[in-house]
Image (tube, rainbow, N blue to C red; front, side, top):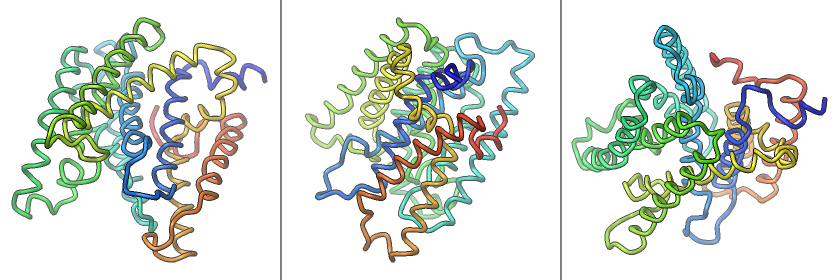
Length: 325
């Protein structure tokens, strides 16, 4: 029993689950905590960007990690990724039905899996260039479409790619960065140090430009190049720190519940939406009824306890079982 409590299975990178658990709690906070002003907090935007970056890490790990799958196995891997992407799109659309004030990310998440298919076995240099291209060109396309004919903005595909809350042609930058991280071997200390340094430099450049250059916006969900650099850089730093901390056995044991949440993000995310939908139905319109602090605490503590128990006794999360490995 002791070995099961310390880890989440021999095939998982503990630090990735830990980072994903942090992203989930950050999204809970962003969705439910009441603000006294319009000023953004640390969790705004950055939690969902971390979630998207970790999608790229998952894609990289599923396709071989630092040693990409051999060519004969790649077609089957792409089929699994495509199937996973389509299932995520379906889940996201279903989760739009319950009434909440949350922009559901899962269908965008699935679209990102599909967009990543041509790139998944590319060299790291190509993936890095794709990430840079999405961070620079994606925001330009978003701006052009936003000011263009309404016909270009009305479809669901346009929403997923350019006009929605998480435009995939911008957010592909985070996915490609995550694949590069997975291909660089997250088990190596040198990789973690490089990720932290590159992430810090990107965050400094993005948020520095937002603070110092007139007209540059790096705020959460602005979907600009500055935000892509800033939020993406923070995501890389968090990933590196979580993987480094997870190398310490005592830290792995102490953070096991958080990593358990990170091992079943789809299930935890879906339950969050259903809980918030129930709250709104019971108390009125979301815009008029702020969520109490107790609701955030219930979601956070409940997720830690329930995910830990499920992981310990049943293994893979309930919704995660619908996805191909």
